[in-house]
Length: 376
Ligand code: B12
Ligand code: SF4
Image: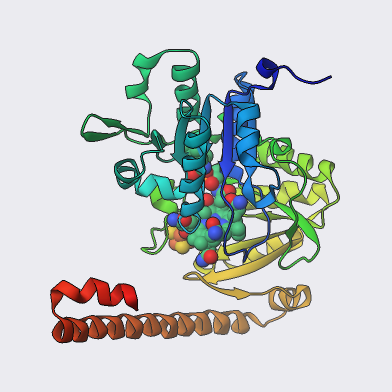
């Protein structure tokens, strides 16, 4: 039977922009799905559109769904897609509230609200609870509560108000992300195990604060762990949905807490599935690697974020079982040398750019420099 206009209406539409580069595997937008699950559990009617897997007419679908609130996520490289979604949403449904959030929004909230009028609110940081509070305020008509929502940023006359983001201390309060919200068209090609897999996040945050990485600013205050029961229930859920070759752990730094890893390894053995993860080399030792290996892990090692993949099963076994620990040390030194080499390359590029701008300044004068750069 055809749905009536009121039946087809939803409360919240969450969208994820297209990865224009198309360089990567298709993976579910976990942050959005986590928010969607929390809203759904609180009784809101939620839909998610991931534009990486979308072939319909967005305008027509907007008219059909008529969401009260549209949440838009995305990364820095995909931000133009996020802004375009905001523009289309306001063109079709001018009264719908448009909210932008996620890793890019968190760091440029003020600039977004100053420059993009199609976006009504930005939510900084972890948004499961803040988004729920915003829905309660708008849909249940409690406008007075808006100014106290953590992480919420909005225009107030000529100024921009930016509330302090919320840190969800206890991750056990979050439900397991409901993958049915995004459908079954995701196929994560397992990098090291091979075959098709899926991914999970077992912790938030990172104890390090590398200056090129947003992990510890996005999820500040160190590492928070999900309870192991919840992690295992999620793995069980993933394995029950479809045939998978393995699971990928995509935490910022999975091996930041040794006890967590040991606990994970102990329990994951019972699942009889292979798993892979990327680690920071200085957070593990030989014993921990052995424990991981014995629980069917395929490990890829990052040394100061330059990755050396020990992706051959045999090579890992040889490394861990024989006396070839020296080989491991060698790999670390090699990685460090690689890092120095790359950084030197970046430095040279920067110096070349500075030199180029100086030459332009001298030859063209300051007035025309921007037009010259634009032409270039
Ligand atoms: C899995 C992953 C990927 C997957 C994408 C999967 C997907 N569809 O999301 C792949 C491999 C494709 C990928 C690619 C890239 N990635 Co990536 N990726 C990750 C990773 C490891 C996990 C993401 C995740 O699930 N996090 C867990 C969830 C719970 O957190 P979250 O997504 O941040 O969501 C929370 C908040 O952001 C917020 N939120 C999220 N969405 C929304 C939407 C609304 C409306 C609101 C209000 C709030 C909100 O609430 C959520 C719940 O609390 C993160 C690191 C990390 N640990 O987060 C990097 C990370 C997101 N990636 C990063 C980078 C740099 C990239 C690449 C640019 C790499 C490259 N050099 O090419 C590309 C970009 C591709 C593109 N064009 O967008 C950076 C992002 C930096 C930035 N400023 O954008 C991160 C943070 C890694 C880092 N520490 O530097 N990535
Ligand atoms: S260790 Fe990794 S996740 Fe942590 S801050 Fe450094 S690069 Fe980011």
